[in-house]
Figure 1: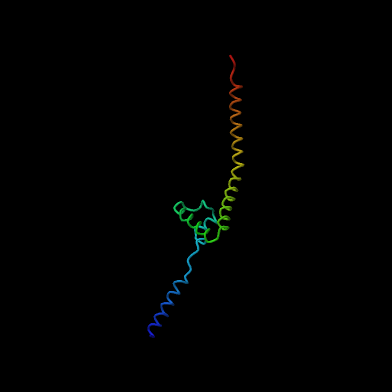
Figure 2: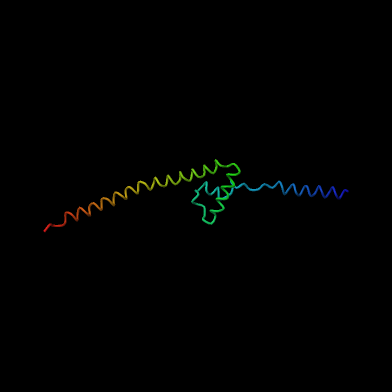
Length: 114
């Protein structure tokens, strides 16, 4: 009888240790952290499927606000980069327009009518 109780005690202790190990949360995965810090575009193409799976699991655990904030921050990061390019694009368009205008004005004024 002593052996029976001792074996139950040892087995309960072992199973308690196995059950108490916490599973890693998908919201604390390195891919999610990378997406928060450097943006979604920083995730390697190989890991895109795993990232989408982690996002779904994270949303199912109730972290919808964290995912919304992650996507919003990524949009803001892209918007800021686009603002920097916006001024360069208009300057480039103006230079192209002026050079075309000078070219055609030169063509019109340089030809002599017969």
